[in-house]
Structures are given as C-alpha cells and as structure tokens.
Amino acid sequence: MMNNLGSTINELDKAKQRTSNGGEYWMGRSIQTILGYQNWDKFENVIDKAKKACESTGIDPNNHFRRTGKMVEIGSGAQRERADYFLTRYACYLIAMNGETSKLEIGTAQSYFAVQTRRQEIQDKLTADERRLQLRERVKNANISLTSTAKKVGVQKYAIFHDAGYQGLYEMGLADIKRKKGISEKENLLDRAGRTELAANEFRITQTEEKLVRDRINNERDAINMHRDVGREVRSTIKKLGGTLPEDLLPEESIKKLTNKHKKEISTKETPIITE
Image (cartoon, rainbow, N blue to C red):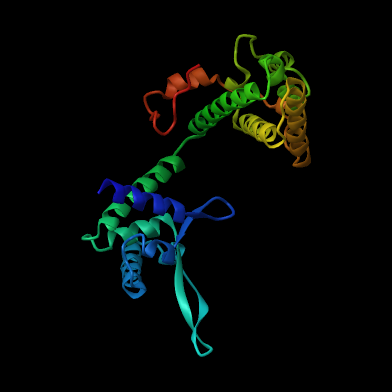
C-alpha cells in the first residue's frame, strides 16, 4: 500500500509542468490515469463537478480550468477533437476532492494537492524579511556545495578562492567591501546583504560550481580565475539591466538579529533557521 501511495505522489510530481514565469500546472490527460481513471469521459465528468465546486465558491473556473484540444485521426482520414485541460494546482485539488473516494489514488491525490496548496499559501504570505531569511539559507547551502566542489578540483586556499568571486562581482576584495559598507570585520557580509545582493551572490556561486564541473577544471589556479570571471559576468549583467551594483547596495539588519526576531513565527520546516 505504501508503494502505491509513493508511486502516485511520484507520478503527480513528474506530471507537473511549469509556465514561463514559474507557475505550476498539470494536463488533464496526464493525471487521468494517475488518479485511477481509464475512461476519459468519466474523468471529464469529475472535472465538470470540480468546475462547479469552484464556481460555487465565487471563483471563476476559467482561471483554473482551461479547455484545450487537438484533432487526431480516427481512421479512413477522419478526424475528431481530443479534448484536454490545462489545470492549476487548485483545479487538481478540486478534482481530487470530487473524485471517487473508493479509489486509493484519489485519497492520495487529495492529501498531495492539499499539502501543495497549503505550502503555496504559506509562501504567498511570507513577508519580505522571511523571504530574505529563506534566500540567505539558500546562499549558505550553495556556498557549502561550491566549497566541496572546489576541493574536488584541487582548491586548497579557500579564502583566496572565495575572495576571487567577490573581486569579480564587486571589483574589490571582501575586506574592502565591508569597509565600504560599514560592516564590522567580524560580521559575515552575506548576513548583512538584502535580497537583491543575496540573489546576485547566489547566481555567482551556483554558476561557478556548474562551470567548474562542466569545464572539468582540475587545478587551483584555474578554479580561482574562473570564480573571478564568473563574478565579472554577473556584474556585467547587472550593469546591462541598469541595476544597482552590489557594492552600492546598503547593508540591512543582521540576519542573526532577524532570525531571533522571527524564531517564534517562522516554521523551521518552511524557513530553516540559519546557524553557523
């Protein structure tokens, strides 16, 4: 039974697609068999019930259920439309809630989409400070991963390696960045960075790691030079977009103070507390 549950969840995850702006959606034909329906007409009846349930809450079903279709050959040159639907997460949740409860897949889907919907609700309600906490944690983990990869390619002088990345992105070393921003020597630069600065550093870090692996770097000198070059490319992109260069961004409240302020209201599952 647990295997069936796990299989249904895995299949729903695999069937998930994303729009160009990162939104999630599923195709009706893709989840039909996952939810235990072999007959499309029966499954479309469930979709109709879900649409009515959506409408009864005052929400326009067209925002969540978008019908589509394409012509397919059925023999002797004849064609007919093969209907399908673009479905949002909420649409899938309503379909699961209106499906046949005797199907094990439906019960699993109800839990799956309920959890997914709740997670999105929590994400949507995050404050700017909470989003910054999440991003700082991502950058911290990315740096750990980069250091591990750097070690594998022959880096031993980690301080010089990481400083090269700052030199490329900020056009100055870490110590000079801190002086310019008025950050004490003992503080971690990224603990005082806002979301824009954190995002630039996350891009620098992740792209450097990927390039180290992709270009099969196998010595410390080339790794250091590459980190500096990637930082410069990120800086160049910021310039082209007309953004504020990272050294000119004002420091923000320390992440450690922010963490203490929010520790009672931020779930460690949704926004891990940063510890160094």
